Amino acid sequence: MKHIIIINPKAGVNNEPAKIKENVEKNFVGLEYEIYFTKGPKDATNFVRNYLSNNNDEVRFYSCGGDGTLNEIANGMIGFDNAQLACYPIGSGNDFIKYFGKVESFLDFQALINGDVVVTDILKFNERYVVNIFNVGLDANVVVFQRKFKKLPLISGKGAYNLGVVASLLRKISHKCKVKVDGEELYNGKMTLCAICNAKCYGGGYYCAPKAVVDDGLVDICMVKKVSRFTFAKLVKDYKAGKHLDNPKFMPYILYKQGRVVEMEIEKPLYYSIDGETDKSSSIKIEVVPKALRFVVPKIDK
Image 1: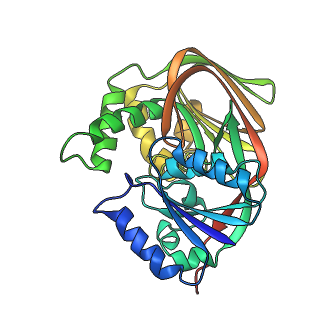
Image 2: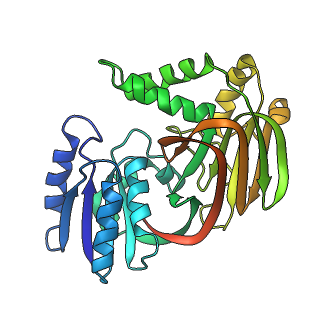
């Protein structure tokens, strides 16, 4: 089996991509491997798809970046049954892998080389695939503002996220929408945010979908209906901890449903986020693609 290590040179801090290259050269001795540095947006998808279109042998791709890099590689792999995906996380979020355990356990190339393959579902939106979570509304706005603040000097990733939350709350936070799940109407009214999930958490550790299972053939929908900013501020702590479904105070504001196809019509185009990458739309359709991704879980010595 060939091992291809795909490194996002813009991810991480303190010359981390260069350090990863040195780490790879130490850990992959005696194995067939290749290192590839991405050149820009969608480059990882194109590289992976082109490679698989011309090679039939088993290959394991290692995503060295964040959720965005992981998403790009997965999008290039879909439709090829000879590809596996491993993750060496150096991004700011790394939320998908939290489903399988601690992030630190993935920062070990030997554990990844010897890891076990699990077959997971993936979500489809138009012609794109979602590895972790598709979200729309307030939380997607936060991602947009976070990117802007991150460009400022002396602003850390966490600081940029917190500033993004504040900036988003200063704008209109609720919008009219209609939501259907498997063809049946789930909701018709105003929503603050909606997360459509394959795994459990996003945004650097917000456990919006505590019931999600990545290989059950279902998508989990968690919606926060119209709330005041004061109520939302009280809700956030439980929402982040994954306790929002158990708190009776918040039952009037939370909708949680599982299904296979989610359709949403919104009064105007809103920002959405696919594994941290943003765009706008007013018409959304997400469907689950069962057993579509071969993902490597690191083997940890006990």
